[in-house]
Amino acid sequence: QVQLVESGGGEVHAGGSLRLSCAASTNIFSIAAMGWFRQAPGKQRNLVAFITPIGRANYADSVKGRFTISRDNAKNTVYLQMNSLNPEDTAVYYCNLVTTGGAVVPGRMWGQGTQVTVSS
Image (cartoon, rainbow, N blue to C red; front, top):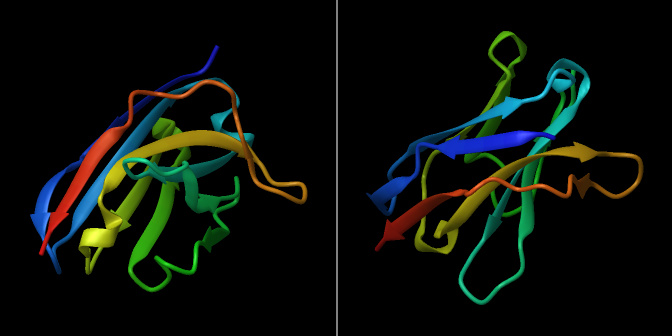
């Protein structure tokens, strides 16, 4: 069973930056695609970005040019560098393993997430 622990959230002003981390306890991390998702209050959880095992990244249009996903396979950790944050980025952020054949589908188990709050 995969355990996912997200960290690095916090409160920032618009224009600020945060770096999120997600540690995954799985022995298939190095061959798994990883994704970051976010869920704002009253809204569904949406994909923000994902990264393939070899480091190819894809982003939601709303974060392109501002967010960067990366991974360290030696540490079983995936990161999300978030720059130029705006209030619309306020949400709980989650990571998960994903499958990418066609649609991007997350695993069934989720971590506790990390809260990101951006004030104007």
